Structure formats: C-alpha cells, structure tokens
Image (cartoon, rainbow, N blue to C red; front, side, top):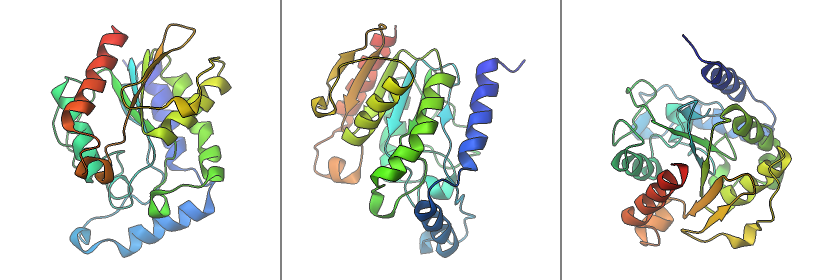
Length: 231
C-alpha cells in the first residue's frame, strides 16, 4: 500500500520537474541538455528541474545548493553524476543511509534509508550560481518539501547558501527561530524551538574537497551526528 507520505512526495516531485518559474535557468538547462558534454554524448539528458530523492518518511533532510549542469541535469537525480555527488553518496552509504556507495543514474537501484536529499534551487544554474530571485522562486518547493516530509528531525545544510535559505523556509512554514545565516560553520548545530535540529557542513564541491577544506571524515562525522540527533 502506498503511504500518504509517498503520494505527497511523488506529487511534489512531478510538480518540481514541471516548474517553469525561472526563464534564465530553464533556458540554460535545456541548452546544456541539447549540446551535452562530449563524454556524455550518448546520454539523453534530463534537462528539467531535478526533483527530491529519498525516503518520504525520512528523519534526516540533506539540503544542497543546486544540481550540476552535467550531473543532476543529465541524470535526473539530485547529486548524481558528478564528483560532489560521489562524495555525498559514499558518505551516506558509509553511515548506513544509502544502499550503495555510488549514485550513477535514475535506474541504478539506489535507495536512501531515513534520509531525503533536496536543494534550495532545483535547476542547474550557470556557473553554479543561482541569483537571488531564482532562489526566492524555489523557496516554494523548499517549503513544500519541509511540509511533505513532516517526520523530519534533522536538517543537514550543505554550505552557507543552503543554510541561509533553509532558515528562511523554516520561518515561512511556522518554525520560528533566531538563528542567523552568519552563524554558519562546518559542524555547527542548532536546536530549533520544536526540538528538531539543523547541522551544518561545508558543501562537497570540488573546490572544498580538492583543497581538503572538507575531508571524507569531516563529512561522515556530520552525517553521523545527524543520525544521533535524529535518534
């Protein structure tokens, strides 16, 4: 039997994939899907806003910034098909939240256990930089995700921008708090008045991982902490 949570998430994901709120982003992701990258010329790119992925009854929400042009925009799954996603899914697997250490494409059998991945921007932006208006437009989907996955207990914010716009979305859905976006720091954790938590991590971007600003151990430690807080 399909649960109410599963139906809610499915309906939400269908709506996200059909979103046309941001003309600049829509034009970009469609152009990328048509021109492709040489290494992926045999792929049929997704070329649409990328939906949420994971357990509709998750206690842990992992929030990223946006899909990659030749990652999620190609594969149709968030954090899939690029190096950032390789880091994230390996860490999720190592702490028991993912069924496999690698997420390759939408039909690879990957499952998340007690975790769901979303983003504050569901379209791949040029230069990986959505503008403020685009982030504001996508807040509708962030609010809807928070409401749909109503059993969440911990949000893991990957990066300062994800942290800032998650804080905004929480207030919009009635989770009052006094947390400031400037409080972001890797490993920082914040208790919400309703007993739930936000935990911060540097984003697993190549800029952070190549320079070892973020190591595999650092990312895994944040996820393990999120699991303990959820329990």
